[in-house]
Length: 202
Image (cartoon, rainbow, N blue to C red):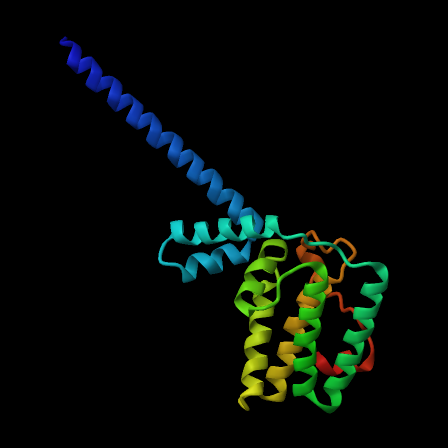
């Protein structure tokens, strides 16, 4: 067999091995991103033009998050924010729209103190999705409902839903180990405040 044939065979083998390795690395990356982002992975896949674009977006979020100095709250700050949240929930009884706006502002304050940039909502959601992928969609929904209310299109029920959505993220942000995502079973079913005002929000 001529030598050039062996060269072609060797090149073909190298190409095949390269493809196999590339596919294995791509699968590993997909599995890692899916494990880290959970439902946020599926949402991003659904809104992107293709899987590569979606996974590049998620990987970029990770890189940006790694450059941020995210820190847990002190006990004093945690207590202060929990008390503020209770006051916001009490406010909901008399003025739901103002209470929802206050909840939105309070979450931004918590995020800022934790070290998240807060200038732009979409960027806030993207940053927080890395640490809290189970509840970031709640945050988006709450923000959307709050904006509808501010534009005069919200109902009391939609405002109640917005408060529930905000509470899901708030609870994670103020946890003592808030730099790690909470277990799924610890999310919305454990309220921060259990007073009569919260029962109104529910």
